[in-house]
Length: 108
Image (cartoon, rainbow, N blue to C red):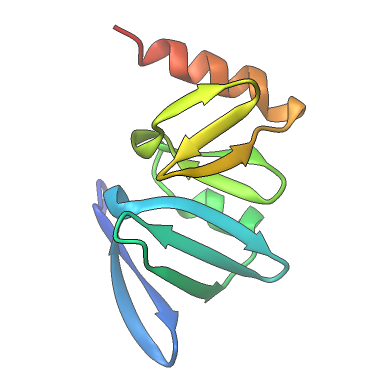
């Protein structure tokens, strides 16, 4: 299924459908991740962050060892911090150049 707009995750003994556009931040918690959505819902999913990034669409970018963000839901980037839905995420030095290059491609 190329160009999928959603995926299912297993959480709380059920399969939950998540649209990629609704995911704001994915936070790594060891072998688990916490997926935050635009509806202020949080889901805990058993998968390592490094494995998850490989199966996400291009609008998702790793910006820190513990965070993946959906670039379409970034409100602003300032002083090495991203803001998504009033959550501030520190951008690690090793990911900053790649992030800036990608954001410049999205500028008007």
